Length: 156
Image 1 (cartoon, rainbow, N blue to C red):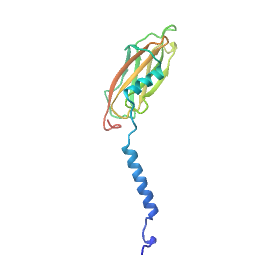
Image 2: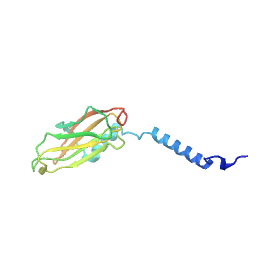
Image 3: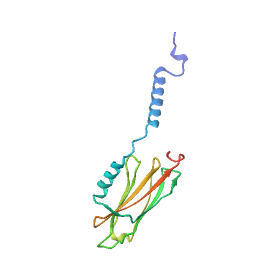
Image 4: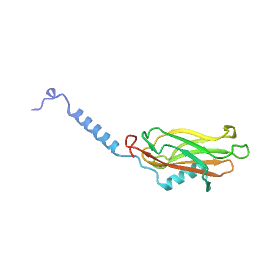
């Protein structure tokens, strides 16, 4: 006959522990879906507005290899005047293979002096990073770079 007092773990505790382990394994194995190319283009249109990207005067300074995908340093510089009548009004950074492509968005005024932003982004895996700038006249400018995330980071 089974005597509960002789066993340090009850059946209820065993089932709870098994369920918790199974759930943890499933969550670790399931990666969030990444955005498709069409979804990224749609996100860019939604955030930055419609229009053709007319030129590529945006410099995206990022490491070629990121050892830590949780903190990837990015610097975006736009080669454009910041005059009251013609200036960069918005800069956004998108990461292609992140579940949510928009990593950051900044609003600028001519008082900024120059169109430049620095940030740290999170990347789950090797991906293209896009920086899109919008002028007050509706022009869209782009810069991009592939950043490789090493296994020691978030996997890649």
